[in-house]
Length: 466
Ligand SMILES: NC(=O)c1ccc[n+]([C@@H]2O[C@H](COP(=O)([O-])OP(=O)(O)OC[C@H]3O[C@@H](n4cnc5c(N)ncnc54)[C@H](O)[C@@H]3O)[C@@H](O)[C@H]2O)c1
Ligand SMILES: [Zn+2]
Image 1 (cartoon, rainbow, N blue to C red):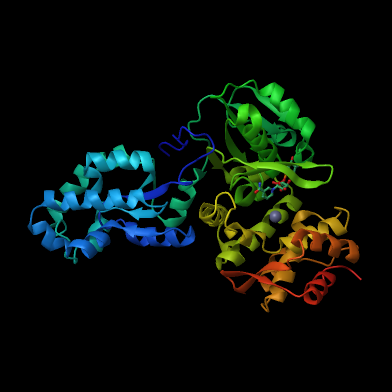
Image 2 (cartoon, rainbow, N blue to C red):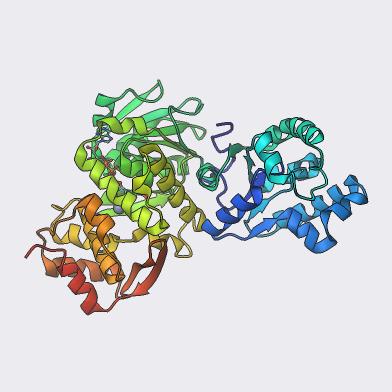
């Protein structure tokens, strides 16, 4: 993928975070349809520059009759105004990037994605429209060929559906191998290194396998070992534990250097490596020290999952089911690569809607997790996160008045041994007395709502073995 690494001078401010997302490409590529979907999923305003021009100045065919230069001038103004507003999703007319000024403004203010389309599909979609430049198939083809170079010169990356746009906007790629990343220091999970070659040659630092790496002494060791300059990049190779700790080291070393995530667990691919949350555990509990620091790129290669133990795969599936319930899409029925792509894109959309969790939109990602954390604590961490999330989803579905069958069929959760009072105390601490939970009005319609203590405690009790 061209320009996969965020050509942004501010490390950690990757892709479309706090920037416009500008969709360019030929007429008929689907920029308006995809743009509208992406805007909805990222809770951003949507601007369709052609519609904006028509609203302000009248029908485009009539404007073209006054000559294309006049139309391009109006278009340049409309794009400039959109780019002066708050971060939006902007679908640009097919010829907008012919303007040098527009290209320069996009370079400064937007993350620009080319929506790709082949010329035959584009013609099929627009041939019956009144678009002035789509009246003759031969001229249409010529224009398509002429424009390609301009598009290529403006894009940072390319996509052909809304999931692709959301993934690209956070520099996430689901594919084989690694993009061209230049020189990096690899910090890898010990177990993963026994099973797989590091994704890139060079210095490799070996971390304890799994959760044992999320500790301050590991962080201190990495701080002294990485010896990267301000321009250095560290690559995390492993599951969520590895990306959490290495991301945290990248966030803090020299006040922040660039990092790349190469997740090797299903949980890492659909959840942990996405969204910029990094951190470690302290004596007092999990993830109590951390920072937001987005990876410059996330390279997801599902082939790594071939060696993943069954229990780890099931833990990942709990997050997949959570995602499918939130998205209202039976993602678990998709083939593995597509399933991972859909889940990663869903999380990317939510994250882009609230990158630093200032507006509470990321809260929905906690579906089932309030109960899960309570069970983990109440069992003295003998219940795994995956088991706990499966049960938490059951509780959330029951409180939502919805059938629990997708969870039952896919995850087969069984009540676990835990101390109800300890679990309840943990849940109350978690809620800080607010009693707010993520539930579903229906699959795909999460709501953040209050639940009475009586109902919440009964739901929790039903997850614990008598
Ligand atoms: N930052 C976030 O947004 C976020 C989200 C979810 C979870 N997390 C964190 O992620 C951590 C859990 O991560 P995880 O579930 O990915 O597990 P993990 O990183 O703890 O790894 C689990 C085990 O799997 C092994 N492993 C990893 N990849 C393997 C492979 N391809 N083949 C064989 N074995 C492999 C590891 O060595 C380890 O023993 C938790 O600490 C959790 O807090 C963070
Ligand atoms: Zn989880």
